[in-house]
Length: 456
Image (cartoon, rainbow, N blue to C red; front, side, top):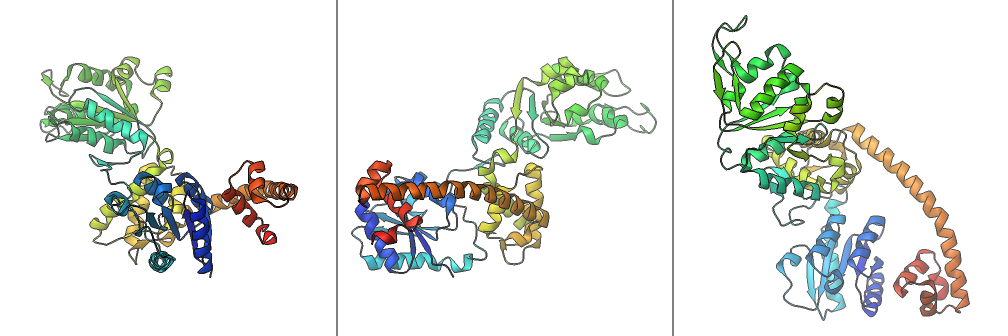
């Protein structure tokens, strides 16, 4: 079994040396990072069980949160010169030690942190609650990506208006959820009907009747008067999903409704006025359809007043942990289960996947995993086999390409470092200066290339 690996985050070289020797003396592997940025970079290349972080080097809670989010299964032990550590920081770490600190206390704290890991080796739970203390749920929209924050901002600005909204984006990106968020954000309409109409799913023969309603005898089978969806949604919101599927003649009638909020029932000449906010959505290129004469230009301009582009999931992968957490909670309640989270391996698989089906695909996969799970931690066995295989194969290909590059660069660097060391007669301080790196970086490279042993 490999030794536990500890990452030392400190700006002080004497502190680095002291902690490094202490950790190595107690049988652990150790690496050094001079800053939070360097620690995050180290976490991309190696797996660390514990990070021993000096608060002065970590700087603030946001940096610690970034480090934690980079490796969720890694415990952080904080070293501070101040007794009153901010609550937000203390909530992110496994332990907080106040200087001066005895070596024994440091080792005890590392051992306590490591004791939390055995149950996580095969199924490490995905830690999530404390990573983003701000509310990431905006009218049931989940995400903190800048593109999502921009959508939140637009919704807030248009919530009290009557403006027609055009939602654009790939299938499965969550356009319907955004439409509902717009409805809920509108104080005037939120308690009124929200009418969702899948235009592409309605047969052409009945869509006009469904939208506008009809009178008795208007056509064969119309045995009673019937209100249409537009009239039923009076005071509320109508979502016209897949607006691109409307026929050209129906587009003309829709344009009138959008402009004047009025229409006639099928089979009647009486004009009905409604107060409705219209939201339309599409996954098609409307400009192209206009150019091809498949979509009316005047309707396009009427719709394209407030346009919201919904990003695909592959463009907002930082939101994946939040979405997974949200969906686990949702489907756990629906299925009367208590799922604690996902393993680190599972989250790595989800993060590497490209999500062609976007959030809708993620919903299906999480729901499936929650239903099939037997031990309250979702692992790779709970995921569809094809997703795991595709991700692993992509990872192997990427790893092979990356390794070939590393192999190509590693030997020349080693040779050059050896050459400089000989020129300065193995003086590490002079060598670091000539190489243009700090002594810690040089020390790590000497260790990496097994040069260190020859100097001792």
